Amino acid sequence: MINPINRHFLYLELSVQIFASYYDLRTFCLIQEIIELQFEKKLDTDKIDKLHSEFSKNPVCDRLLKQIILRYCYMHDIGFKHRQKLANIFNIPIQVQRSILIASKTTQD
Image (cartoon, rainbow, N blue to C red; front, top):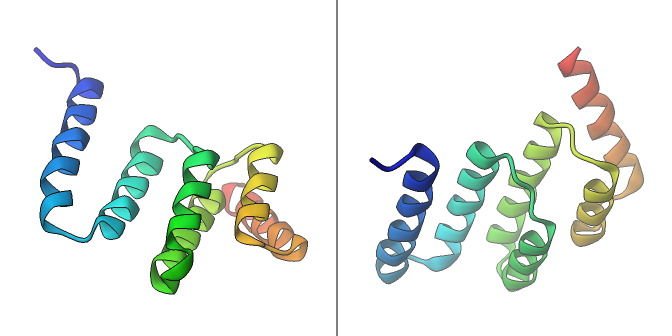
């Protein structure tokens, strides 16, 4: 019997192999990032930085990645170090960071 966590990783591995051969890999990378953020609650800033540099020539994918990450930051309480790294990656001004932080605190109360 496969436990749910291993089943999840097995599904991701298989879906990478299947979808990468048929579909645009950038789209799949965005979908995979959403899945990882939603189910694993894991924010990997190194991976996000890598995706951001890969998507730098594609403004649509870059904008979608930014929106995905900002939504995650809005919905979850992340540490200051992660927040600062993300701000540096996406060039998010301090004022916008503060408004996101304030908005997320008011919705959680």
